[in-house]
Image (cartoon, each protein chain N blue to C red):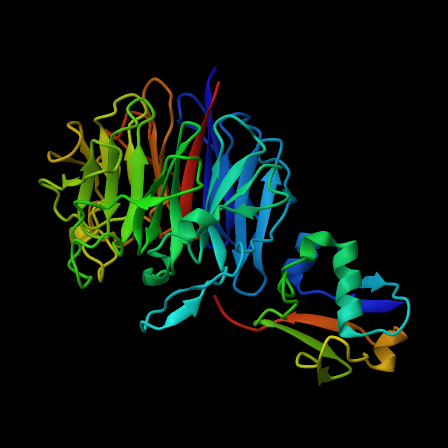
Length: 369
Length: 98
């Protein structure tokens, strides 16, 4: 029988939540790496027992952990992230040039084909790759070397590369706060911004080529030309692999938010979690609602069954939503209040798997056959 | 035998209990002590000092014999009491909440 494994990164450790395909009863293991910030944990599609975790600390820096047995045991691998060549500068908050400085790994994206190949999106924004299971990391410097690089500025959370989408052997999308979305068509050697159609009131030129605070991008692998984006404000859609974007916020109660994800079997079914505003990082009216569109955007329905509908003031961060690929698509998200909610029916009903973890930074799910 | 006390998170990372004991040939300096520590526990590389520059991480301090040695240069000899093992060398994470 199929089963699922939910990988949860929190402010104070990692947790592994496991269930059979019914997704009713859960085993909870953790905290792994207790006391450390776990920005992301993700499994290799090519070998589900191979997991990578980003473990970091303001005191002791970055550690990358690897498991070869599905999270039962872990071992630290390489943690040296050195920018290629002379790092150069980007813009600091005050507009002055600031040297690129590595802070942490926000996102790990294992290759779909090779368990030993994994990409890392880091702060200050850069893309690294390991081809030896995380022992050694090399930057793909073409991204940071783009002519716009010196003008990139950090968002309030730091200048992080938080989204990596691998689309076949050549095409890669990344998103950076607050530079925007970029695409490579040559396996990461060269890059160009793909932000046409984005409109951000908070920057001097609202339609600038770079400078947009993209929060998350999602793609369905069966229809890779279609991308969905949760921007700082605005939910966006591209039908041409990022060449142009149009707003699909439609009837959402607010179009601010962080995560966005796509149903495993329905490329037009999209999930977001509307958040009141950038100064109110909690759901409107204290009601935690996932919104689902079955039309690829514009028309949205609130999903509330099993979610708190009063006095709820948590946030859901950009990497804290995931879907499984069981026949009845499961949807999962974690909150800054430490709850991890699961729906085994594509969002119609929800139940908490756990209620009292540390603040959740990331949620991934593996569907095990 | 040099005695080193690691902060709790680094003991967990290095999978050690209690003090670490190191043999160091020649003059014992902060640099040679950290080199020996990282050689024995490679997972600690980058967690105490920067990989490339060797600069101490901002929220890490080095204490011994009731002195703060954090700002001493890497080539400065450590006190005789540390070199002889009479006193431990403490690697300390700055106190903070959260």
